[in-house]
Length: 331
Ligand SMILES: [Zn+2]
Image 1 (cartoon, helix red, strand yellow):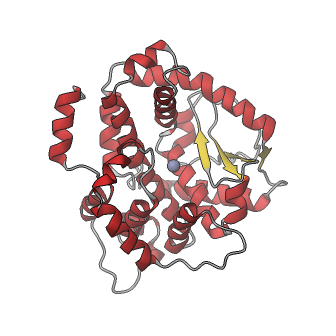
Image 2: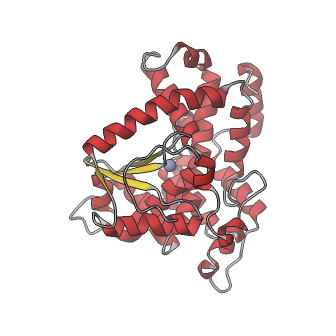
């Protein structure tokens, strides 16, 4: 039955929550129970994180406590979206969930002028998305749909526990390890931070693909990214120019300072736009949204799209990465 109650519940079956809700989306699921649009690098790097002894169980334990506290805080300070409050946003959440074949997520709006949104879920807490008031205010309805679709992607791909763990480890490292327990401290190493950050960036690419699948059109997914970069200034009549953005991207790719991006948890907006452009021509997308295929378009196979996305997102060559792995002793 469809969940229409936006209030918090304990949810003991996250697997069930993300399980395919209709036969249409079931055909898009891979053997590993992840959707076929998931970025290969995301799945590959997650396998490496899972190979670290006790990583997932430790992450679950720590995140369970943290997510519960966070949920309470958001319920205290934000407004729950539902059929009677912000019904248009509730409808977008329901549409995105239906499109991807997951349960309808709880959505909250919290007072914050910055453009941001995030998702939380553990095996104990039903997934919830929170939107900053800034992003609701400055995005068009179409762009907001891509933002919520992106967050639903995190739920469907079961990123949330890893995301939270990554945030805790990274913020713990930046704060000198105060926030997290000694056990997590043991995981802190440059290699671990780099591995988590690299996985996080790959996971964002997966969810940007979910945003396109949920979108009214691909352009909304791209303009939402561009708005995140320029702040979605109110009162400015801005027309995005994709060619100018791609020229800016060429400069970014050519800069030797790009290695500073290694510790970033999100790919730059320009990398994300380039990856969305690639996915917009991929056969996998047309499996979900056949109407997005334009006549005469050269369609990319999944492998071609993966290779092109790898080039857009990777900051180091495979050779450099293997050198780094030996040095850090990472699996
Ligand atoms: Zn994300």
